[in-house]
Image (cartoon, rainbow, N blue to C red; front, side):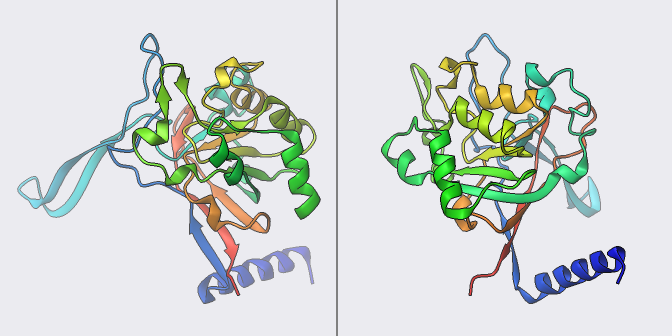
Length: 266
């Protein structure tokens, strides 16, 4: 049997497993609506636009047989993708925009590191290298060209509690600088994702470098996923992630529908 025939057989089997329910499709995306929180920057900086939608017609004089809407939002609103050009460290890289990045990077294996207990005890928790190595001791080494997602339970929060903004800035979990460097330099990940508004912790402005997930990931041509929903529905390993941003010309990021293929329980 040729390699091509083997590949066709694998895809046929996948289609059958999806149809039979042996492989489940899990949606990791928040619904885009005007109430979903966005990142809030100091007032001297520009701000991310919330999602807005207006009705164009609804089977009426504006369009007798059709119903549709116009919508607007920021590139980094809701569950969204960060391309390397989003950060200064990635501004000069090739293929650094959402319309030019290699599409094979948008589908890959995913490892989910459970940090819910630590985050429940400390909302400013930063996942360190030791936490990743403990994960690998239990589930095996993170394969090259995988997505790594940090599970914190943060997606169960709503409204102001989700942003968790106080006088000294936002308070939310994220990865430590050493963890990001380890994942990029020694595990060659595709990208990193969180359930919070940003891939960095809320207090990451005080890190070295500031906002290390953004700086290191995008400087190395890697990607970020934010505002993921319900990572507790994924196994630690064994799932496949599909994360395809809109093909916006020169786009720095995009809202997207993040899906995972997961073996059905039982």
